[in-house]
View 1 (cartoon, rainbow, N blue to C red):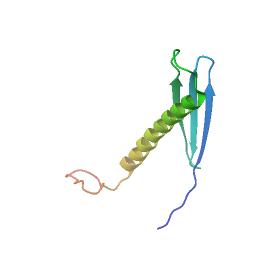
View 2 (cartoon, rainbow, N blue to C red; view 1 turned 90 degrees about the vertical axis):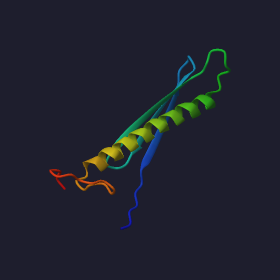
View 3 (cartoon, one colour; view 1 turned 90 degrees about the horizontal axis):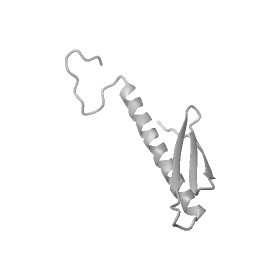
View 4 (cartoon, rainbow, N blue to C red; view 1 turned 60 degrees about the vertical axis):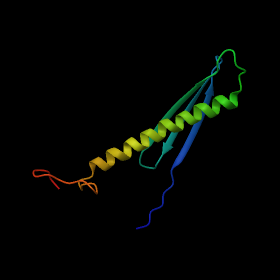
Length: 95
C-alpha cells in the first residue's frame, strides 16, 4: 500500500535586546499540530552574531519537535490492539 503526504513547517525566530534568541516551530500534519521551542543565549563577553543564535535556537526547537514526534508515535504504537512483533502474550491478555 502506497502512502504520500505533505506536512507544513513554520519557523519563527525572535531576538531580544539581551541577546536571547527564541525559536517557535510549528509542524502541521493536516490532522495534528505540534509546536517546538528552542532558545539560545549570547554570553555578554561574546560578540553578538544573530545568525549563530538563530541556528542554535532553531536546532533546539527541531530537537524538541523530534522528541515530541517520537513520543507521539510511541503512544500510537502502544494504543494499537495488536501485539508488537517479537512480544509474547501471556494468559489473560486480550489480543
